[in-house]
Image (cartoon, helix red, strand yellow):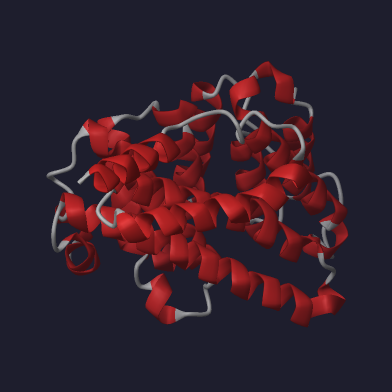
Length: 291
């Protein structure tokens, strides 16, 4: 009994939101440290498999690590190194799915049968969710959506797009301001897919504007996400460059608690700018842009 109490205490401590990683300014230090932390989380979960907060934190950790470091490494590689880039994307996909697995475990504990319900009738599956569930809805959607975005060649994954959108839309209804517009930032990606897949560039632009408003322009992620998804899809080179330059002009020290996320987004902005001729091989200035 005492062992169980101790394990749950450790699990609760680990799952609490802190700034040890999020406020760090050394990306390489965090890159090296996070894998150990994730394996620690997994080892604790073996003894506390039903600890919902730690399940969510583990999901969040795998999702952020895969995005910030593994997928980012893939994007750095030039087109001629396709095999190496694809290998890193495949690893990122596995990590996103690994993270999703922990979130879905937490979701099942919260609402048994929810995974099947989301895949069968996503619009009606989440009526039970309350404001306290928003972090879990967000990270389930973020991990699942990230997996889809990097695995568009896998029909079985793409088929779950409606479930991801339902998770984020329900969270928006419950707490639109969550993490200063993070939900709207996710919706940018979800709405950037072709109309045949349920996307809408106009809706993506509205979510972008709202994400910038809620973050007071201090979060580079909406700019980078919109540039990488909508601007590339619409072949708008001028808008692409302007958005990324705006993202890079944000001072990471304006919000110390999210310094690391700002640096990660800005690193991606640099990577994308370095590939501008590859992404827009036939584009020439000037091309109009508007936010």
